[in-house]
Image 1 (spheres, rainbow, N blue to C red):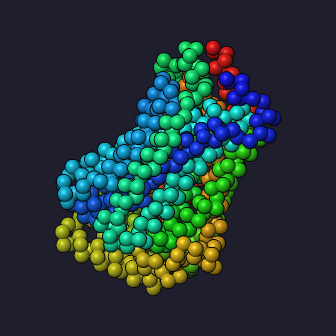
Image 2: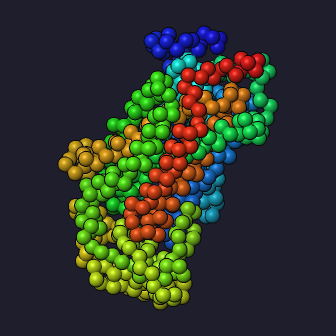
Length: 577
């Protein structure tokens, strides 16, 4: 069976895919698209979900809790990788990722029917967080199962091409979720969508679940796993063997630091951080930002397949490392160009107005790293820096004597801050209101757009095809370039990870570093970037986070990660047998 399936490289590259090979890719990719669709729905609708399930709290607090629930899904992904990776190496690939898709799909559907806080009280947010954690656990096992299943069916010499179809699924899942949300919004209207229409995308997922489960039930187990199981060479303790023995653990570390960490930050920057930057920093309205990203995804997604095929010819490492290096070299000029096109008024104000913060840097200023959203920054310096960061203001900092109350000079106008820890009640409210009013007036006089509102010069679309306008089209091209970088690092990585580990521990060995890289290195990016922006007074300074991680991966990858694209991944199994 192995010899027939994994024929010589020259033969399989010339022949078309068989019907069975197409079914394998379809079964794995379709299910994984639906899983990512389920996962992204919550992130896209976090604000509305916060209003439904955390309505007993003030608006700012409920948004924090909604994002915490979303983050819970990311944090548990590595644990899902361990649980389902071990199961996949013990009992098989097919049945394990049948379990993961059932857990994911049912959890998502239940979010759509879960009563709100107003109906069942505190039980609503508790159940919601539990469902989010189940989604994260399932996603932690889904990706590894799909990739291993496809790779172990792929002919020798075509693993990059076959597994690249799986790599399209995260982007297609994001695109599908955006399209469904935008479609439902346009049909039911904003008011009804916020009241009940948000449930429709979650409920629709039950039909996607039924289709994907039906497709996967038609498939056979991986031939490599069946052979290994029949010969009794499968691992009895996959976790201990994968991470407790140095000969395997070193490859897990290389996979994390030399491949997935850099891939993760490039991936998050090109899709999620780009969306965050447009909406939160440049204050582009939600519809326009989503449509711009959607078009970039549509135009760039084919790159996953292109680079997957190319990796079969020249190797995985050159493409992944090139993507990391290009990202590190081009992020700063590219995001500055995005600002100039998307919000010209903000760009002019940043260039023409000098803003200087004067504060006791050591005693009054904190590094506002807040990944959970629960930390409170109340000093006069922190209050001032957070306000400037929210208004996308670039500023410099001058140190002041200890005990000095922080202040900011905007084009010569000085506005003092306040220490929120020393005030309460009406005094705190009055201080906050007076400070915000004075700061906003000074910024407006300097040409800064009003905070929280799109400026008249900010790019705005009236329909899905408005991207062909003079202001929007250059943005789509720049965002598409970011997506192409994503496809460079992400398209070949599944094959690269599969080739690092033997069949007996492959599911476990590749899943954990993948999900730590993407769930933690990638997932922490928004909080880290905002803290870096607030600390330095530079809206682009947060880009140093993905740049530093990408450069780390480039160096480690080039020096230490082996190139295995010509490797027969079944040779070790035949030797062990």
